Length: 514
Image (cartoon, rainbow, N blue to C red; front, side, top):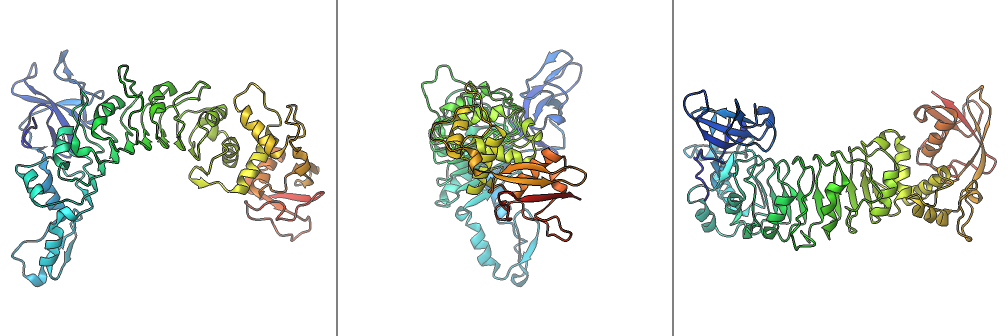
């Protein structure tokens, strides 16, 4: 049974000032007089304890130290608001009815901006057609459920055309109340419930009014994978799910479930800003048969083990920014375990921070044969060719039994074996040296000239990075010229290839620094 909006019963949601919380206890507290309410704050920093005081347990909290006691008579308490009344206030707010017509005005939503509007009667009539709104937002308004008679009123208004509803930062206490709010929004396909706290589901739950949802946002709700499996019967058409900032440490594996592939239409899953610290905690991801985009940024995920088995074969885009991945060997593992990746984000990991940015991009492109987007930037065909050839020049040999060797073999077959390679390429593979130019590099005096072998397709920025390691001048301050004479024009355009700059067999390049 759904509690009335004015209720201060257990599990009711309220505002205290501007802070949301859930009532977990009502009664006396040892050593005090009068009645108290024990509350669990949405923001744990507002709490003082875990529901225990002086050795007596009064209630439990889902997050550590997020509980405290308040008086039921506190003037700061704000009760839940009805959905439809709040909707009207936000979208049909007008000035007083007795304002003369020529001076009538409308207040735009929550902005408080008052705009003069001639023929306001027509404007008001149009705004009153709430059911015509395609997107509705009553986030952060204290909505807690349906007011008395509001369900019938929404029904009498006719068919609603709303496709998106934002109920973030609300006072809704349960999924049952969510269902009551959306029951007349038959076209609804996107529901945002971020920063809410619902009573946890205990059994598989069927809420038919959610059946058409394709997108569901449950960030900052503390809802985990186990509860999502209980909700699955209600959302058979879900294709996009957000569970970020939910303090998740693992994805639940149901030992008795007969469903081998839950959420069969789920394409996009967001699990950012959680507390995953092991790849084994993510094993259920392998059962998502349609998953194409997975976001795991801002967790604590370590190096990828060769035995990793959490990526479904359908995966195309993976976001791993700001984890604790320490080495390039993890990328070799990923390249063999997620062969269909076309998009990848890895910034903020240890191996990235220890590598020049351009070489990070080069290393990723070379390892992943299908990659089309790296860190949000598209990969060009010439960039792929240069990256693969340069990768071979940096790795003339690759142990046969080391993960990543399969990719090395593919690149050798495609571009030829490095001349100093001890590994045996296939008999018909060309030799990489056949494509290299012999060039003389002239560092600033008193350093001596340096012979190098370079690809004619090498971009200028890649040459600068190579020279940075060779002669010790930072790429950012390096200036390159095709002539020694004073007044020679500096080469510009980091993406320009050496052949475009006129570099040929036996050519010379002069290096200067700022």
